[in-house]
Length: 200
Image 1 (cartoon, helix red, strand yellow):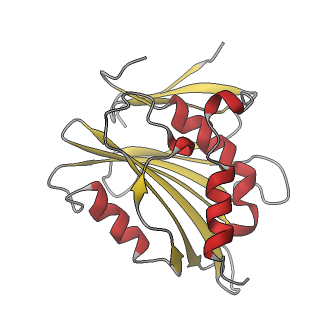
Image 2 (cartoon, one colour):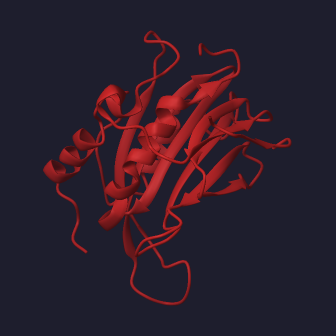
């Protein structure tokens, strides 16, 4: 049974074909994907959502006054804690006037990106088939977190869900070379994602 975790208050560019193949690979419908072991239920009453996450991933509240949460993992492997999944809620009237504006801002930082499109099976909206939800995938460059070194290509996959008086942005960010390893974690999280007042 899932254990509830609560937060009080709070090297070459990827080709279009290769990026599309990645999206299709992580886009299998949930019934075809084995359940991940060691999942726990995470509940954030302040931001109004819940989701399943691996129990060994680190959890941090969001920063810069944007309600939400960040998860970091995996805890083992050749690059521990190199992947991040963030969930943030943007109210109407925030710096992003719409999900499309948010996606455009993220894609503006990219060296390559796929067009914004309706949500595919990789980010199937669990609440309502009629809800208008979107997704995007991009590649951008980032400087190393620690020390000096060349910039690294990072892959970002985003799912945007409308919420009450705003929208939720769910982002999976990881080094391009290892993004597929944690893509199932993101797929599972999105499939389990619920907002206050959503269908169970």
